[in-house]
Image (cartoon, rainbow over all chains, first blue to last red; front, side, top):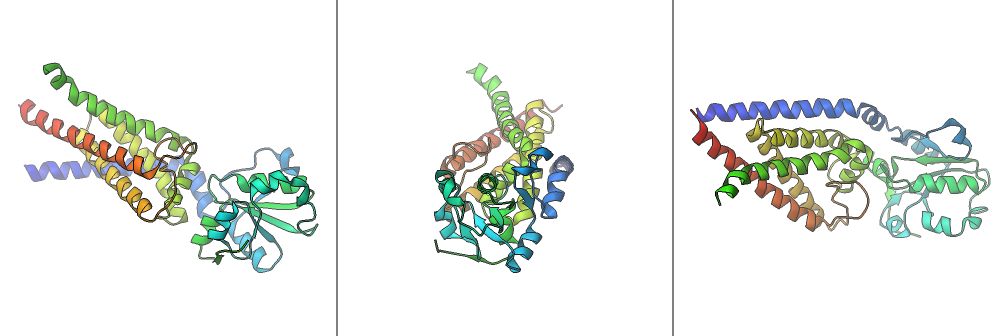
Length: 164
Length: 145
């Protein structure tokens, strides 16, 4: 009798977990397929804003461009976070610093350079903000890698510590 | 005294259920932010954080609703106990590794809730779950035909 009631409870638990899983997966299917393919999780809203908003870019392309030396990776997080861990070869440009002296952004990188900004991924918006500042400063080829450091690190790509 | 005895089980059950419903809603509304909170624990890989962020809130919501509606209370309470143990383990490991992160328990973003506070809260919820299970068992033995 006791054994039966435990079996019943276990079966109910399995059903509840299964229902939650199905609900959760279907509710978030767009987000999940995007994350699986390494696509950015936030869509750039309006087409006409395209001129002032940096374009999202996925992990595979970031890796390709950085391997080929065709893009500059820029870390939008604080210099402390940068020192702790950053994408190998990335430069540090904390959003706060860029906000403070946006005039100095001009001439900081080669004029025609392709710049990819990143931060902590997921809901971190600093890279998008930094990207906007860079576009305002006159750079035309600015991208935002929204997976950021977590996606890069978890894909097993090289990271580095220290430095300024 | 008898009033307390009479209403305490329902009060504990409904408030525990309400807490889990309240915890689930903001995560369902902004799964990407919750995935960020999960990733900050550095326990799951990149996609795993998204999977957990997609499924966990619905489990919280369903179990919370079951408790409030008093339907399949034993099963719901056991699942909630398991989730609480999981959260406690995750928080403890975050504290042990010295991670300075937001617990991501309720509303995402905003002021940080320290892992210690969150841990204490989860222990309280676990105790409430044990009470709910106990009351249900008592009910089953006295009310059974």
